[in-house]
Length: 147
Image (spheres, rainbow, N blue to C red):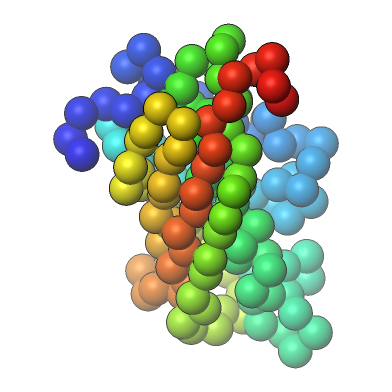
């Protein structure tokens, strides 16, 4: 996809997206939105005591929470927010490499942007650009009055 996918062709504000999660799970995990392009969006998450599993590695559940957070926000920015909301339907993740510290970066790109369903691919990489996790996220697009 080379066209701008964002609602009305307006690039989302990274500060606004980060602020939207300021009182929910994204804030608890330290997730911050950092960049976007015409058909992708990127966020980062620290690998620290909040996101570790008991053995000092990035928790797979934290990676999935990052993937769902970025996929949900991306979907929300691609539809008319006065009429529609996106809700997660399914997510899967393959955890490929451990990370012990630093940051991981998630980049979401759409595979399909239908009227009622979106499918997003999310790649999570470490600071060296090595693939840590790959996820596919399906989002249902529903009318606001149904939420």
